[in-house]
Amino acid sequence: MKKKIEKVLIANRGVPAVRIIHTCKDLGIPTTAVYSSPDRLAAHVLMADSAVHIGEAPPIQSYLNQEKIIEAAKKSGSNAIHPGWGFLAENPDFAQLVNDSGLIWIGPTPEVIRAMGDKVQAKKLALKANVPTIPGLSDVKDVAQIRKWMKEERVKFPIMIKAASGGGGKGMVKVEQDSELEQAFQKTGSEAIKSFGDGQLLVEKYIEKGRHIEVQVVADTHGNVIHLYERECTLQRRNQKIIEEAPSPSLNEDIRNEICFTANRLMREIGYTSAGTVEFLFDSATNKYFFLEVNTRLQVEHGVTELITGLDIVSIMIDIAQGKKLNFSKESIRPNRWALEVRLNAEDPKNFSPSFGTISRLRLETGPGVRVAQSVYEGASVPPYYDSLMMLIMSSGLTRDQAIQTMDRTLSRNIRVEGVKTLAPLLLSIIRHKGFRSGDFSTRFIEEHMDELISTFTDRNSEDEVLKIAQYVAEISALGTQKWM
Image (cartoon, rainbow, N blue to C red):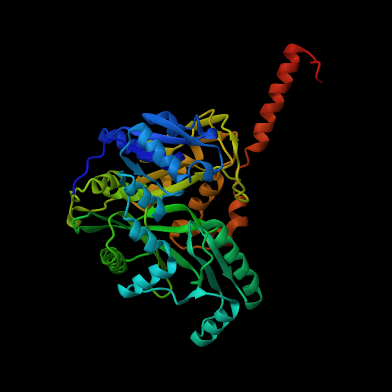
């Protein structure tokens, strides 16, 4: 049944909200932003056609307050909600509430979100669809159960203990030896309850030197399921991605076709609709891949797929939500470029601690082959309450080397941020590293090379301090000694 979207409320903030607003503007669809008190002057608020205040800084009072968001949609005349990524994007209860409120949910069905949000259930469905999974144990109650499983299945350390409802790199702990088991089990269980409200745990064999591959899939309500090829998301810190690219330098053509076909089959089997990804862990030593999870939302790194295919995935999601058929075929998708994305977070590049404050200077020159999705501007505040992502910087070229060189130019010469620290020095060090250039890396790349990467940073702090001192001397010379001195 076709439904017309008249106005879209974005139940999010920052980069995802800005990204969705851009597509809605292209489609001529008005938008509503929601905002917390510290976000009243945020970029997404200024860009939207209307904006509604939904609460104070803590997310539970604002961006996670389901009733206030529904109320904001009705108040603003919005008849559809797009959740972006993070916050309520993979919350089946919220998706159901949107539908029950007579609004259009731009995403997969609540039933699919619920099934895929439970890692134990998702793994069962993957096995049923004949998708290879990592050797593991579901619904773990105690450490003795883990030890028994390892003995019976001849599994050796390291292993990974995970929250069944986890996601976004949270609720997972790597265990290197038996003496760490008890503490890791307690830590994961505590974080699972705190972050997801569900203490159910599972354990899996940890794949050494694994590579993270995800396949982008779109599916309409008419039975059409099409994959848009894969992305490599191996470069991570604290189990969270910071660099992504498409296509993957890890796969040959045979493995690429097999893994994409497998993802398509799984999504068809579970009755998926809208845009989503199937994530795999690829063992380059054996050329085997294992199912990890299904992300039932728009991915942060969807932009690199858009760059190599020429499609707008947000626009596709909106069309599917209105009951439209996919207006392209699998045969028409012919990736002909290489694309790279880095996540510019407001963090100290040496230890990943959050950096917040006011952006006193922001200079960004894109140049050819560069796409930027940003949620900040010069003079904007970076609040301490939310995700530290400030912008996504993407580059593209006919080859991987060209895409890397374009990104190098952008990070080294065309961007300058002052007032907060960013990951820019680390990102530049990574893309210049011989291991990254050659495609020889795994999910442990950053932790294994961190000291080496930091040693290449160009420290601007000394230059900034000299400028501050010079300004101080100039003021004293012009105005004389001040009373406060």
